[in-house]
Image 1: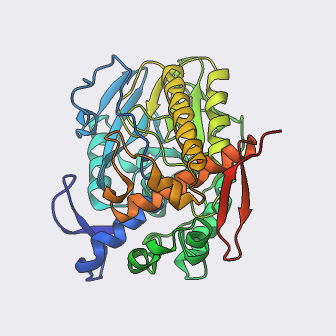
Image 2: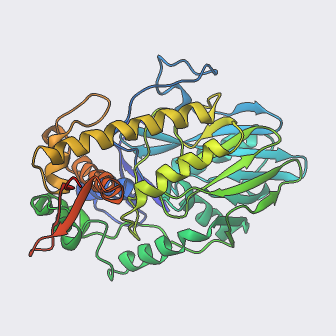
Length: 401
């Protein structure tokens, strides 16, 4: 369990430490790396909201206010706080009936999040022990870790997508010091970004988590139907943000519990996961297309307000990545050969910031996401990839036939 070491919550910056430790000087940097490594928003955010629901577009963070939002039919949204700049809360969804409650996602294993979850459940007439199931969308710390902690006391059942096995194995190896980290020397060399190593090494030498990464009780397969007494959810495999990400679709009620796959305010980070996945963006684009093959549904995201149409936001995300792919190709056409060089040649965030103006962790994210876009261009035959004698991936425009 993590406890507050310094600062307020959820306003930041806040420093967090493991119980019994005394490292406030390095806590913020280490925790920020942890937060990013376990799934921050992407850097290509458009900053648009297309819904006309209860949250005004003008107030970008209204959805993070503590409490319970009644979505009808026994479904409630409960935002839980996060100590992450730019990502202030995660939505946990309660599906209630007289016999108990099931939760979609769980929040992060921090005292304020646990306290807020307790208060929200009591507002609905339940206690933590009344939670039967945690249906988790993916393995990132802000979705999974509180479920693991609560299970030790209350014996709740945790379900997670079967393709997250590799991420749990890789994360445990990093915790034990046996892994190479999210961005070790080999990865940074491949991306042509070794100059980021000096600044990153101080944070990256610590384990990527201060929680126990236990297995779930159930591994969910793609397409399995979950009987929740009052409704049936179908688990749909949507790799991209992580390789095992699931969304939970309630076709009868036209609800899509979308996790981090489809977010209304931001574009999710792609492939920033312990096990790694070169083709994460290709997987993600395929998963977005899969959403369009399902009936449209109300979008219940993990971060951001509930919105009216999943399909509308999916079209926006596809358009965003089309634009980013065109920008990436343009940078290669201009002679930039590595993911690091290309990332420095394009703009970032909804404010169109220069790469040099990003903080170190955002630069790491930017290079990783650039590499993902380059791999899609390579798979489409628009660029070619070779490997230098130093082990760096080099891209150039594919020759015309």
